[in-house]
Length: 212
Ligand SMILES: [Zn+2]
Image (cartoon, rainbow, N blue to C red; front, side, top):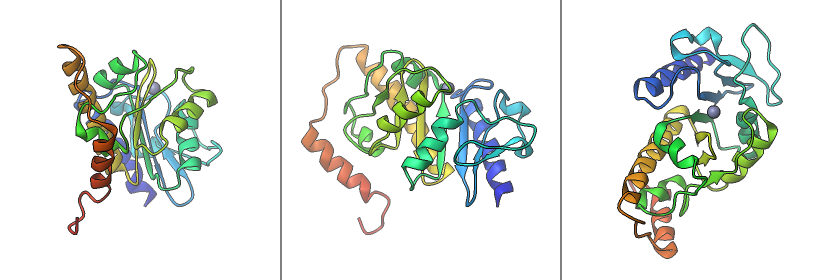
């Protein structure tokens, strides 16, 4: 089982690079398994990756073997500690989300699909130095009742019950970031009201269900 998890992680890293969502060794992915967290190694590009180089770490970050885990392993472990329903985490420096993150702003309810992330905005976690516990703490706060957040002057992060849903959410956040930036080029977009967004978020909670 862990082998297939490691292959899936490598596949998704490759998809992110092919789609221009990550470049070189930036970004990282983890997937929780029964007894460990499987995470991309530090400093390797997708071309250098292989399932055998995915690092298995404990919830407190201990690991064995030749490959060191991503320098952002603390973000991943803190998320799994705090949100038990999360099974996968994707962090990337995708162009549009990163561009927005450099303005340190929350993405408001300019489009109803913002509600698919869990509320009436996509928060931007405060700036902290990469690889620090402080960064993991601000990201955990920004993820409250959300499936993704921006990270100030850095990039974005998405979570999901499994890797494919985390990937879908990560791509949605990048798309929404692109649309928000475009809409800002001709002024401030008209925002959807809080009341309407609570209706939208309610609908997303049953979205995909055949009984909805
Ligand atoms: Zn990063």
